[in-house]
Length: 312
Ligand SMILES: NC(=O)c1ccc[n+]([C@@H]2O[C@H](COP(=O)([O-])OP(=O)(O)OC[C@H]3O[C@@H](n4cnc5c(N)ncnc54)[C@H](OP(=O)(O)O)[C@@H]3O)[C@@H](O)[C@H]2O)c1
Image 1: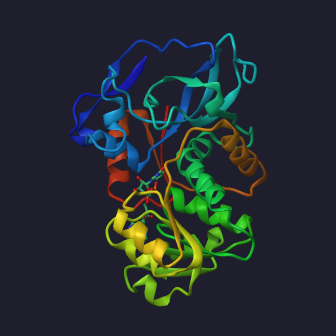
Image 2: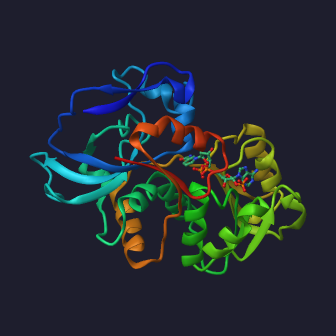
């Protein structure tokens, strides 16, 4: 089969389309013929030798990617939930070796959900790592109806799902993006928009119960300024230094980090919402498999609206 192998740590240029053996599956795995896959910032970070690279670099060949939608072609002896011909989607083996930039992917059955028939492979593949992150952050925070949440990078992959899921929970959503994406985040359901390029959000946002932090640099320290005492901040980009954690504790804020993890139950909850329209994927760019490195460069540019998808 064809797969992109990572041969170096020089970024997307180090991805090479190569003929590799089709994976064999274990008893609890299924083999999926990939129809669409989605790209995330962790992909390009790993291609530069950071993020997940340290945990997977000993594998050969090294195949990046985690987010797939496709069709089951084989099932392991212990798998009862899927059969050949089923359409499935999910985030495979994150934060381990996903091997998703490939025509076929061996995936633990416990990481997948059935793809609703009404949902395109592109939209299902989109709603994996990014949607699971939003889902798992909101579950960790225990966000309740009427609470106020500040969602940074609301127009991006994680953010555009987080806005929709927080609204479903009955929260009041304040969303940051540049002006060009204002209408998009308001259409997702955000109650307030802050153009982070024009104003410092901490000067205009009234106290919130939760911040979902996804911006590096001094954003995290500034976000702490808008959390109510007793509220919380969940960072998905790390950055919680002992100093910041102590500052948060001093002012009565719970500051935590979260790393998304593959989870078929969470993926099924997302599938239900895609099926009935409570959750929608916004795919802003779809490129063929032959242009995957170009698609990853687009993600690297940091301006993605919704998701970037590659089809096979
Ligand atoms: N810990 C985890 O498990 C986990 C999981 C998923 C993602 N992440 C990390 O979380 C970050 C976001 O991921 P993502 O997939 O959502 O990224 P993404 O889709 O690439 O985000 C792109 C969006 O970021 C917005 N943006 C850039 N700078 C901004 C700023 N200063 N304030 C507000 N918005 C800004 C852009 O909006 P404009 O064009 O309007 O600027 C763009 O729409 C990445 O660093 C990623 O690696 C971590």
